[in-house]
Length: 490
Image: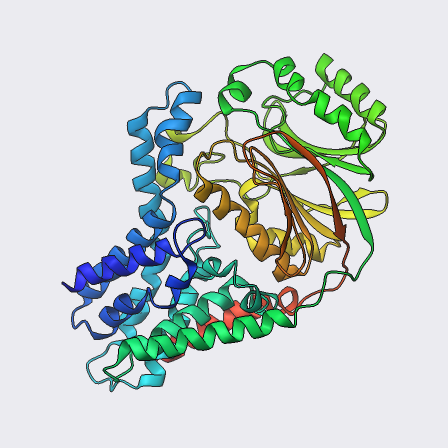
């Protein structure tokens, strides 16, 4: 029965994630798991509780990747079977559970026979241990922060502001803290205490939200976002001229919009078009437009390939580029070759070489911090771009693989957190959607309808100030690990 309750806890937590069910579930979804971890007597019991919780939580959160891996990719890429897709999903979820076993390891230090349980210490231990496990998700070749608890609060605008102090991890800590306060209480009236805690949380959230200022400070910068709606089978199976024909008119029409910058999504072309006739045509198109353009397509050399965002000036010349630094495991690079060397069958078109620098694009004197696709899942990228002087943040992405709103929303909500953590307006421009503008407080000011071609202007506010998060994020993470270890051994 205890394992079933842990399974329920994991599923409920996954259902609280963006695009699934209701975010408020997160305030009580961990209770059964925490109880079972604290009061199980055997090491193997705590091990299986951690495995069951993390696997069910991540599978429920990331279920939208099943149709991507088993249907969408096989339909587009020959030789990639549906069975392989299901195996890839199972293996991916299993690998993503690994950081959560840090909770189990720390619990083995904590649950010694002579220990006399203290309510406050128990609450703090699991709050810090869980947060430490989520910190581990950011590091290594298998790094991926999807499914982290804090992301459930993307629509809690008041509490969301705390991310400017400790990032999404601070919100994860608060979530586990609230769940632990209820889970470890000796008071038999658990539902009453849960109701009081959740009511207090929402009272604080709405109070904070009332005092968030309007996004009026800073210099204005106007840009034009072009959301494409190109199916992946056309993008991957047609030639570059067909790909160009699908957006060339939209690019030309953007001349009618104000501003000095036009943005197209990632993978506007699947091939490297430099030094080709299509490149000359694109140059002429941009020159007639008379504006700078940011767009994405691969860079392929004799030895390497990069997932690249390019900056074209108003004369149609490439003046700068950014090579994606944080690549997607198995899809864009093979992690830990010694271990996974025989798993190259999961590769899509090609493997990429990671970029080395978080360089900033300069558009008419405006510093633009540009990142590509799933890099929004890594706070480090936005933070580095901010430290390097970005006045606002931009992500270009090809989300045409995702046919569910859940997948689109979970990817997009990463941008909400990156905006608040760095106090920078954030613009995401996507193929199929979601294309939107988020202000520095995490409020979505404008969003395009998904699944259609759409062009419109966004007016962003530039900012140069740094947040507490920018200055202390490393110290915060170190402190979490130190406190976790101290609570475990003292």
